[in-house]
Length: 218
Image 1 (tube, rainbow, N blue to C red):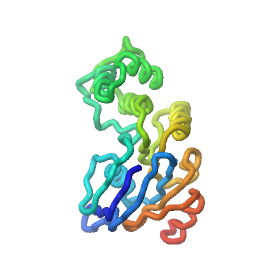
Image 2 (spheres, rainbow, N blue to C red):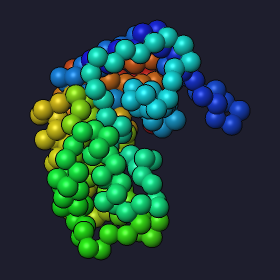
Image 3 (tube, rainbow, N blue to C red):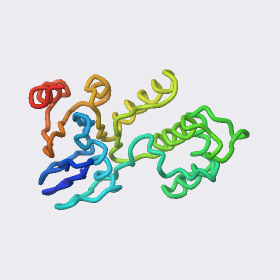
Image 4 (cartoon, rainbow, N blue to C red):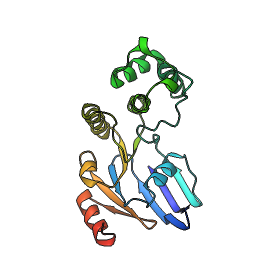
């Protein structure tokens, strides 16, 4: 379980202060696939970064009794001077995985060839993001974190990402940030809304969407 306790967080956008968390106390369980709905600009990505430890709270506390991933497909850890295989090897060692096994797994998922590997600086953004997705799916956590986007590139690759995410949701918890409830409904079995610093929980995404439409019509 990940628990927020009287959590407060805000950020400044131009001349406006956005309150992402307003003294929020909330539990995110490791046995639930939770979709978090919010309008653009309400702090979905900031909440995701707080949950995984990439950003700190301004006030309050967070307790992590479960392991939680970095956001699905997050590529910020990639070192562009290294090849894909070298980057994957680094993550394999960091998380105690067999290096060769994990490289093969990620290359197979991303559709890459070992013999064609080169420093990521000379590859495309889609190539690099596919590597990041492959690593996300290769590692196991109690809770898989998803921040809006699910897959890149062509339709076939995005469908593969969604299927693997659905598979993960059968074995681990999921916290998925998004603005489109019909996408989240394919792998989430409960819901929450994030609006003006408050988090409200609902048994279904439809109910969360209806509530958000009432308090913040598009």
